Length: 299
Image (cartoon, rainbow, N blue to C red):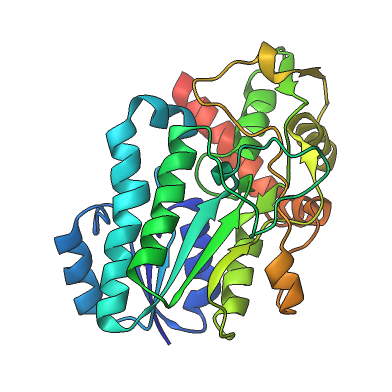
């Protein structure tokens, strides 16, 4: 199988290259090689790679930055997927696109989870642009999978796990305040890549939720993270109101992998197990990298 992966240098993209590259013929591109917002560039890249599957991991994921960089958010998160969908339809490729929990408003009472059939109502520019991307894919081609995931973290890229560990390792005197009234399912990007691999061998079409099983708050995640790393956990819980951000975030980001489970192809671990395995696999390297980065910045 020939697979074209866009956004291949991001945290999910790198894990997808790792997981799929050993089994399939993978062409991996990122923004420096392919700007998905350019229809001309997308068509040229797809014509060159001639993929059977286009896996779109490219996105503008800086949620707060999207509020001030609206045009960029829409170009990458809405126009880009539309371009890929048009190219997929023209060539007969299957499109797999990564979306987000931010398409929901999070107003469901916790612990009720969002199913694929629930009504969307994004609150932020990021969420609105990602929902538009979903809608344009559905309008442009029939052979697609849209995977909504949540609270993604991995070895590479910027994410909550790296931020918290970086703060604790380089600013141990700083007492962290972390939100304790937003709920979601921390999802390891490698496990999501494994889920994508599983779906490639199925006839799946449409929208699927693919996040870790179970849920927690950001404060609970940070506490468990530091425990797994054997680091001191001096963290203060705070409310969303005490930690205002430019973008409104859903209070409830818990996703139910309903379709994956009903079709017997759900491989997602619970969030605690995923985090434990992530730290076991990458903890030493991650902490060494963060310390080295901090040392370089201060030298």
